[in-house]
Amino acid sequence: MKFTHRAESKMVDRASEQLKSMSITEHLLEFRKRLMLIIAGIVVCIAALSPFMKELFDYASAPIMSILPDNSQLLAVGVTAPVMGPLKVLLFSAFFISLPYTLYQIWAFVVPALYKKEKKIIIAIVISSFMMFSLGICYCYFVVFGMVFSFISSFSPQAISFAPDINSYISFVLHMFIAFGLAFEVPVAVVALCKAKIASREKLVSFRKYIIVASFAVAAVVTPPDVFSQLLLALPIIILYETGLIFCRFCK
Image 1 (cartoon, rainbow, N blue to C red):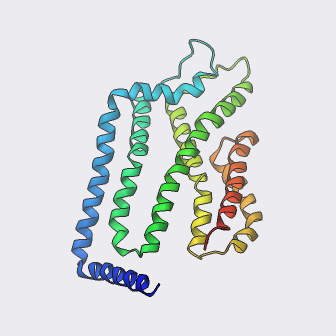
Image 2: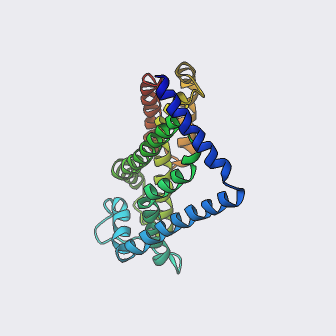
């Protein structure tokens, strides 16, 4: 045990010496290098996905098209709408696909300042965060959209032709993707708070009633103004918070 402790202390000392030996200019140059690599990764993904821009848009618009009458189309109200709609989908897809690479570059920048135990925790948080964000997007696309669009269209009177314009629909889709992706980070945040000893499990349990109220408040802000959509976001937040509390039992 003493040998392990000494070895770890030496490693920490070497990391500290490395940080101290770097000047502010060197830190800024390293930050610029990582930032340029992140941008380059996103640009490469944009270039690789550009030939499939129409297919990506068709896939993004599939949930709304499935509840519209046959031969229906989305409206292009603005002059640039036919271009900006697919372009937004392309940029979001490139950002999402390059996200693991982006997180790796961020990790490579901060790793010299971390202890060995902190490195393991950060790696676990990064991987689980990406997985939960992806799970939130999948839940939104495959579960929420079908129910929400069917619910909204059922309230459309016969005198109204329910055909959203491209810009409003894509903005809504991306807004919901981000909202549900972040909402699914709740268990990761709970475990991270507990693991970092910022808040004990008992303290987090005592916050349960506030989380319930906050989840419905957040859902009321980020989802369409109907109870059905709010429940589809609020209930998962509550369930995920409870899931995080369960995992906190294993935190030491």
